[in-house]
Length: 186
Image 1: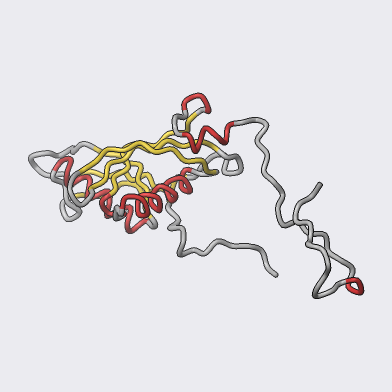
Image 2 (image 1 turned 45 degrees about the horizontal axis):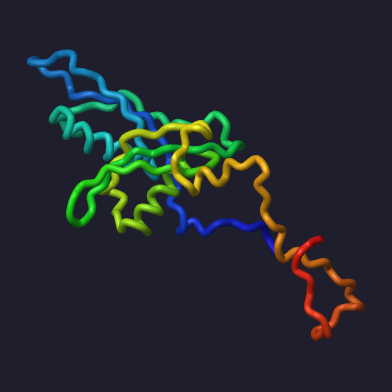
């Protein structure tokens, strides 16, 4: 048996991008204002598209009348330690636009945002293109509010070791035995 790997279709892996751009210089406005955005997307193409979506709303700058100055992927400093993440977002439901705050535990911000997208799809039937992430933050344990995150902060937290059955010697193995197997470790 190989190592356990999660089905890639179950979790849409998001990446964090920093995109810097502006409207193209014109005779009326020779030095346009430069905008920098942190965006989450599956790839650079979708990140650029999202950037121009927001630029169109901000200052009427379209892709045809604008220029990108930089596109960089951002990575977490310590992707080996579990952290608490807070995500502020707004999304469009079938009837209205709603603001929301959610908390997740993950090793990276990308993983937390991936969790958020799958939770929004499952609980609220929100399409990814209707979700706008307003802000993300790494939270200290004292700043967390949600119960499903707070219950993981116990220093004496223990998980039961289940289904850890001792391997019986080959010659002593039997298809049927008189007593039930012990599925826990003493």
